[in-house]
Image (cartoon, rainbow, N blue to C red; front, side):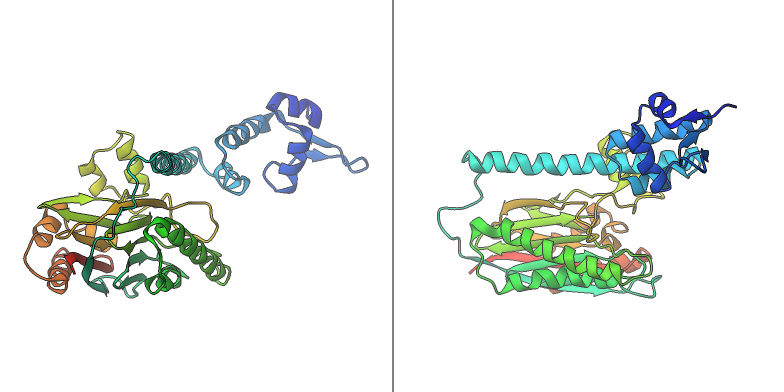
Length: 357
């Protein structure tokens, strides 16, 4: 079959010759032949299918490094990768929409999270991180103090435990810093940025070049609390006898549920239920959810890793959180339930009761 010149191939693929030269340099789309004297590139018409796939993936906004991986896969595996990227796009768009809605409400004076007076409330808390029955290492990290609650779950592999610890350590200075209610989100955002830089350093020291963790944390000022969340660690609120999950999982399976392609019951047993579409990686590619909440005396909060939420149903969590025990006793019971369910993963929990001072 006659080869096409770079100009003819570019027109057929709807790519510019400049783009083709770049893809050649990156090893993404090599020419079929190169003239030894002129260096002129020639392409096989059979390469048009790969070229068009590259064009479509670029229109999705997929990075070139990831496009190269997708193009080298069999069609079925490539489709799975594209589905995962689609879930990431949807999740990030939802996060931007949530933040935009908050900013519109905040700046227009609707639903402002800053109260006119400081409410004299505080929290009683307990925190624990336990090794599951199957794992040989613990990548979970927790922290609880009078103003800061946090849970992080490092992804297994080199750097996972260091990444979760780095995320918590970046937030710890907020415990002793005087942060007014109006600046809670800004303070959390800065701290998460510091966590990202620390995780990037950790990733660069690992053989895979990766270090990944989830993070769910609360920062308090009076009755106001700011919540930062990314990944599949969770935050629950028990108020007036009812339980509410106040975070949204950033997983591939949750995106299928959101799209109506999977039921919550099917999601609970899906083999890819732990596949994250957003997490802290140090690359800055995924941003966490940020929100403001008003706490009330009598509220009870639970922050936990999926080592608890994946094996203990919400109705069981509700039953334990509704009990009369203090935070330490509640943690004892939650960990017991996780172990009774097999504890296939590590278990990290923080329980906090809002009380009047």
